[in-house]
Image 1 (spheres, helix red, strand yellow):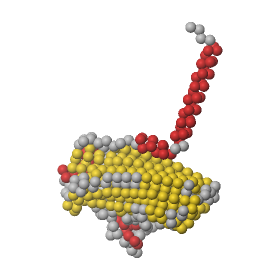
Image 2 (cartoon, helix red, strand yellow):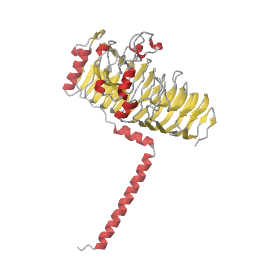
Image 3 (tube, one colour):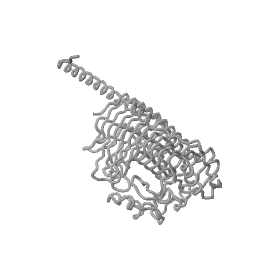
Image 4 (tube, one colour):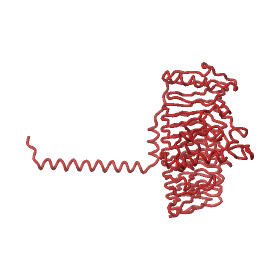
Amino acid sequence: MIIRKTQICNWIVFLTAGLVLLTSCAEKTGSASSNDPWKKMDLVIKSIPQTKFSDKTYSITDFGAVADGKTLNTTAFEKAIKECAKNGGGRVIVPNGKFLTGAVHLESNVNLHLEAGAEILFSLNPKDYPIVHTSWEGTEVMNYSPLIYAKNKTNVAITGKGVLNGQADNTNWWIWSGGKGYGWKKGIPSQNDPANREVLVDMAERNVPVSERVFGDGRYLRPNFIEFFECNTVLVKDITVINAPFWILHPIKTNNMIIDGVTVNSHGPNNDGCDPEYSRNILIKNCTFNTGDDCIAIKAGRDADGRRVAIPSKNIIVQNCKMIDGHGGVVIGSEISAGVNNVFVENCVMDSPNLDRAIRIKTNSKRGGVIEDIYVRNLEVGVVKECVLKLNMFYNVYGSQTGNFIPTIRNVSLENVTVKNGGKYSVWAEGYEASPVENITLKNVKIEKVDSVYLLKNVKNIKFINTYINDKKVESIN
């Protein structure tokens, strides 16, 4: 068979045209898909691997645990978890009863399962929480172990209908906050003493190695409640958490985590319900948050420490949750220096006279960070004190928070939102002249009983589409 040069050229032209056509189609398909953020969300959910555990069970009572609420069972928990892990994993059972313990450290392939009627009471003695690599308000530190802690673990869970009780109140952990409303009085040591919180922040600014940032005894930095540090494939399901010392659910540098059907009821200082930090592919669904601080607060490190770690939080999904008391329903910041993107919130209910805001982004020029692509839909809001949507580049706490790292906030969308009592403002957004808050969309939003339609400063391209505030249609602002 003789193949002529002209035939080869024709085939090349034909194949090239075919490739161009396929590439064009693929680009159009990809573009269509990328234009719908909710399809992105669906793909993220499908990509999250499920935890799987052996059928083997290990009851803590078989390892010496006593359900009298007085006997310290730390060793029994440790033995049961290690035995379970050594034999390939399974469920460590906490049966009906009250079990007192210090820190509980989880292992890979272990599901800590609390049966109905089980309650784990956590010791109020700081000495029962050994020093570990953890984080405090967005700064990595060697500090008291979280009450439940897992580091560098894979396929790990906390499940069941039982209760985790931190036992914190105004007579113990909460006093350390230095808040007069939490039992603190002049002369009582706290995190705000010059040798404590401020020293940690300064160490991070000077890039002191984390291994040398040793705190713990005498430094009054409260431990997190449940922390998964550098973990993958995690499940927290159905449990109830009460009376936390500090932040409650804290995935840090953790990927692929599902938090499902969890109830948080804790009104102490800094009692955020869930704080994903430097984490990706986190699904929070069917949960109830009733808190003393933000219900959900998405983080990405504080100031220099956040820029050192430089892992943005992304693909954070909140579905079918109920937010009651709190500083905010779903919040991004303020520890946010590494940035946050691709946040999806849908089908949630927020309602309480003690809920300050529904959706909030808070940062400043010490934090910096790029916060973008935040999507909210199908939100039912009863009462909020201050505003429905607050976007603030001038968040200020612990004194002056100004620096040289101007933040970016862009691409925030609210769709199908109803609010019965919107508080002071429907939208409160403040940016910099050099970095305005950009591309804000409210579509099919109805807000009633709000004092002012909006407070805007250095905002670019805010669209109101079929949006009514106090029964009046609002026009877009370019």
